View 1 (cartoon, rainbow, N blue to C red):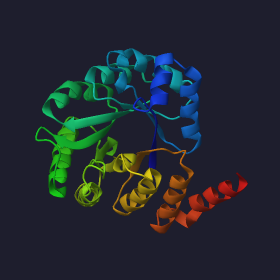
View 2: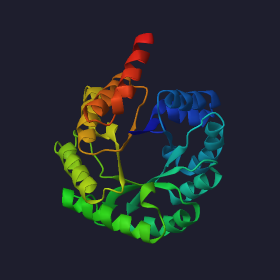
View 3: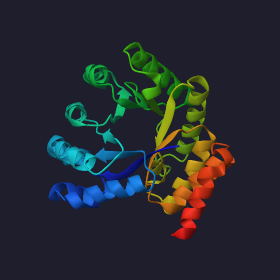
Length: 264
């Protein structure tokens, strides 16, 4: 299971304040804590800074890479910001994210061919959000074929079927799970990913919903999650689910995790 740590997102007020104040210690500690908790990538989102986004990314990337041994996931809808960020990364980053919208493909495709980052591809195109699992699969297939034709390795593509808040659409998690299962069945060479905490936005007991959704998503073929690795109960659910799904040979990770919990 690939974990992308979500805590350095400027939509969180404490993180936005740290970006605005150029609080180096806070950002580095947040990155390090997530790595120590088992994150494989650190998601970096400065999108809410708007016209200051590019300069903030260019300040934050070297700052984080100085203290981390894992790569970044560069989270921005702005092609200009993405281009500048990818150019200064010392480690191969994940581009978060690319959609099937023609204007975004046109803006980012030359960059992808040149720098070859890993990619998170959203199931979203010029017609908007898919309303069925079959529509999600169609977008995923179209995007994968396009990218592979342009020289992107299928192993570098993460497909995100997109989960929306249950508070907005009570069927959103069910649609995500059926889309995920269909994509894994038909495009097994691609990895799948989700921003798990989106599902609980606006509802009470968010961590409970996130943990339960993780278990369901893993059982439907999820390979990676953008989540909070510092949530201990989330980590416990992850290790238990990996063990039960026979994804933890000899239960080594589960037993190690439980031993470490006892020591702490």
